Image 1: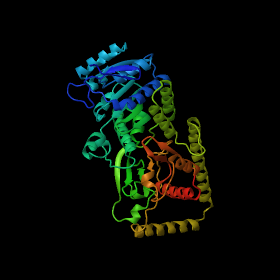
Image 2 (image 1 turned 60 degrees about the vertical axis):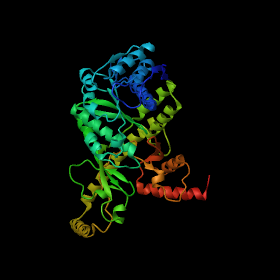
Image 3 (image 1 turned 135 degrees about the horizontal axis):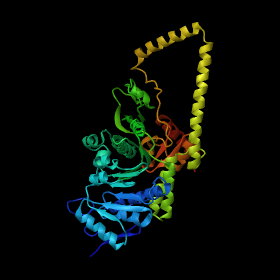
Image 4 (image 1 turned 90 degrees about the horizontal axis):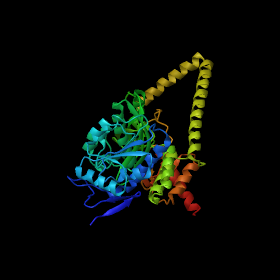
Length: 474
């Protein structure tokens, strides 16, 4: 008896398929329908963006299995010229049968993925990997053109979530531990490996979207060609200092010199309250943006136009909100871009004013005041040497990446004061915005908040908000 399912307007024969790949058997994972829906939205947004100069977008479903993803592209995206590949002959035969039953014209190949990627260029490449995607990344960037799109799906949870540290180090060249923000940490770890592979071909990337759910991690990147783009991206791979007690975290600065007091990068005081080492170094991982608000909004628009499920639309709505990470008062994505530019202008204005004030101070200072300042500096340095271990570390002023969407998030159950009821999470987000912080919910964790507030101040605000809830209950 033939077993068929319908997905994105395409009927697929799944008779005899299995959830995990085995020799001479075709794989079909029904749980990955959400991932395939995100990918088709990314392809639709790319075809309408105008970045592809060809009349037809050359698309490759590199690990086709039943061909459900590639056939959906051919059905839903008219500008897509689809090639579906699978090295397994049984899978290639199943793809041809499914294409014929749906009256769709696609090219089916039976090649090794790396060989095919070296032989032909594609504008849109989808690597739906069962396990690690690292073996295919070098080949993926070999022929991909400028502004081409690479979508990478990884399902090796053991390596990405710190359960198999040796495998993590071997595949991704980094170290991670189990944390409350593990999903985004895993996504940034995958992006770091993508950047290294692109840099070998003198190419850089622009991260358009990241989706990390229970069963998969998917990253969507746009290729930027040139050694300067590669160098710029490689510099954005940095280590993280992670406090094992309170889970505060911070990126290391971009420097070749060692950090003498790495604990000063954290906002917590766990080092001064405990003896011994309380932090570890994680990564290196990607430290820059992981969302493009405009591209994510286009994906949401196409998801609505394609009449995808409510679950997909709800996911993309959360991602759009997360990509903007608005402050108070809330504004749309386009206004948020203007605010970002204004913030940069204000920063430059403040720097100019500080330079003018320093110049005036230098002209106004006398020789005696300068001598006194040097003397006080010497005394301060001596006191630092005497009391370095006893006191809490001084905050180190370093240049941290300023992101539109702040890196990482805080889980409310992990960081909320004990015995306090915070109410609904949306009210906590609104409270943070009223305190002039960026805040939004995150799809990585439904019980977490993405914000640029430091952990120390975050816990203080949660306690104040909880007290206000008790005084004026809703």
